[in-house]
Amino acid sequence: MTHPPGENPPPPPVSSTEPTDSGTSAVRSPLLRTLRADVRAERPAAEEAFWRYAAETGTPLVEPDPEGDADHRLVTFVRREDPERPATHVLALVHTVTDKDRHAGDLAPHLMRRVEGTGVWAISHRLRADHRASYQFHATDGSREDALCADRTAWLQVLDRAEPDPLNTRPPLPSRDGRNPASVFDLPDAPPQSHICRRAGADRGRTIDAEVDGRRVTVHLPPGHRPDGGPYALAVLLDGEMWGPVLGVGDILDNLHADGDLPPTVAVLVDTMGRRMQDLACSAPFVDWLADTLLPWAGQGYGAGADAARTVIAGQSAGGLTAAFAAFRRPDRFGLALSQSGSFWWPDDERGCEWLTGQYAWAERRPVTLRLEVGLQEWMLLGENRRLRNVLRARGYDVRYREFNGGHDYACWRGGLADGLADLLGAR
Image (cartoon, rainbow, N blue to C red; front, side):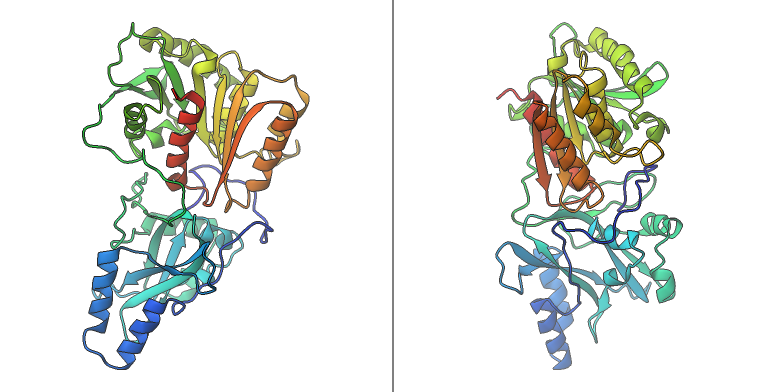
């Protein structure tokens, strides 16, 4: 429900001219209004009938837009009161939608309300029909003041305790550091994500844990890989400890191979080793290590990475910044870069901001291809990504650019990673 661990971008503006999702109430939903009317009329088993419906259809509840706009939906999140642990307040943590108000210090719009006479906690958001996000619930038995505390320390405690939606039927989004998984919703017009789930019958690649010069890495080999069978394409994925053991990116790669959307590609997942903000902030020593140590190692052991035009580096947030920086600094080794929600505001100090955009604007054009994507709900990154796109286009770079209706969220990034690798390396 926040930016990746260890990353702390500057405080965002409270307002934005970009499309936003607003308006919350427990009784905007026609389904909830019917339930409330049935309870008031003392119709027997009205609440049980509601919960049966919610379990059958899955949650959140998605209904037509109350304003009649076919491009929007009314999305209602519901939580059933636990009689063993009754709550005084429940927060619905909808990725980026909630974050925006949390940064502004006001979580009140995200408190769920009890439908009178029931154990139904609910909150509704009017969202565009292509929205995708992860979400959780945080129930407390304390005061309203405690429930609404929005400082960073309190917020991290909320994230440590938040829970997924038990009635959501979609595969959950795994988490790390002992936190609970998140639930995911995607509205009907959201981009498809056909590669993210493990498929029965798909040929499986092989995953190997290794260490290179003291750095933990994970290697995923394509089905049928042979050391002498190359040269293979290479994908270097930053934040490897997230993509490997947590998100299982090997399934995504195997699905891409099975569909013919990716040539045989070796993936090397690079662990941050607790150095995320040091290495993923336009660090020349780190990028040179990738180029001069990691890639030769991958070439010697797995027959991949010799051709810059078939070598992609991919990252998210600060990793997205670093992917674009790697293509700028070492185009001799990284001919392709995939940046998802890149933190192009960096740095925010006496050097100013958007340093890398300035480098691309004034330096000699590199022979590289970049794919950038950013969420429409990422008020703190959208303008910066658009400006870099404009600079790249003006300088004649091959830049592929996409905006999705979502936020700083692995629920969006995992589909974007699959699409980006297929676009940059694809066999078709």
